Image 1 (cartoon, rainbow, N blue to C red):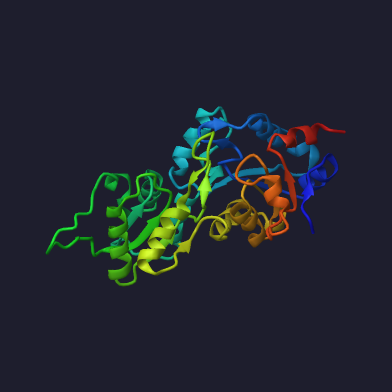
Image 2 (cartoon, rainbow, N blue to C red; image 1 turned 45 degrees about the horizontal axis):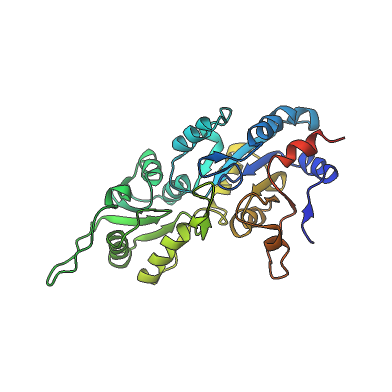
Length: 308
């Protein structure tokens, strides 16, 4: 079925059939460090109106593929943008997912994790009890091509986690490649494979998919993906909120991550056109990923909720 433009009639039907709303962040809640108009009021309204429109209150959760920050750092960003009602427990980032994947699969505590990515991954690894290497610390290092020299890497690295990394360089790629290719059983984990993202409020920038693709090329391996559209994080959401996926709605700006994540998990899906996807992209006859509903931006919910 073709996606439906969100209206006052179908929104109320959607709202009353959902217990948990999952929101992406980049392009949905904010762009770069700029809050998208109307988001704060909409989130407050969703929380306050829940009991009057439904027998039970609604859960609001934020599920982001951006691995640059930890959940703690994301909570600080929400607060800095005036979204003071958001708690750390409501945030599920791909940095957290990477650490939880290792924990869920009994990754040995005596093995280390090499990170091509930001501080957020290292912090989540530390909180989960793992030892992380690399990250921003290796941003200024250079790989030297010298005759009769050998690039040394830690043989106890048992996993390489690759996420968004604005300081990616040849040193990091060589380090990660050697670990994956030469350390027996070394895991290759990607936080996500997003092509681009709204790293600033005015432009899209290359996403983690670029860094992951570089490692795929050098290792000749495909990664374990823990962020959207993979459903790994959904297990934690179900456990936390005790909600069936059919009673969840994923709200996002990307078809190949947000909407596909929701569909893969059995959620209802709502696409907003405030980020990466335009209406022409959505309605293009070649597009095969169709949300249940679409609208221009999150704040449209406020208008629809208040309509007769």
